[in-house]
Length: 192
Image 1 (cartoon, rainbow, N blue to C red):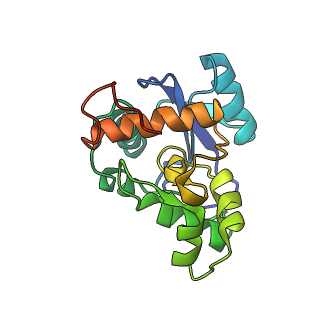
Image 2 (cartoon, rainbow, N blue to C red; image 1 turned 135 degrees about the horizontal axis):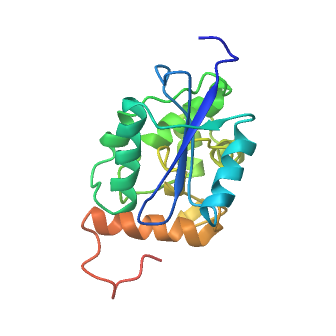
């Protein structure tokens, strides 16, 4: 596929608000990017167009519809198993190799679990590379398909989150997943 293939996007509703998803051409190469809620729908559309150049809104083809359904289930707390999101093909060809490796390891973190930036760096054979992992996670073009919200600072502390809403969004996502994984009996238990 030509690097100049047209980029399309769709906006869809979730339990947390409207999200966005983008693909190139017929989506045969996978999802080009996704976006967590960003204020109102008009702001989300503007953000999708900003992120993907001259992207145009269009009805999603069947592979994109499957990805949308998986994100909707995740954000509704109906995904107790991370493997559903692993089945979504991503078009990550434009990312540096290190970032692709970080994002792949991040995708393998089970729902309701977390890892630290340092743990991911060590798994990549780069102890001491926690900051580089943090930078790669901060540039994640596929949230929440690549669940960078499951990556924490040293000691498991919730740290920076580049999605709209910052740490509050990260906490909400982790709480939804903790419930989905059966880790919380009810609202009376705090996640942090």
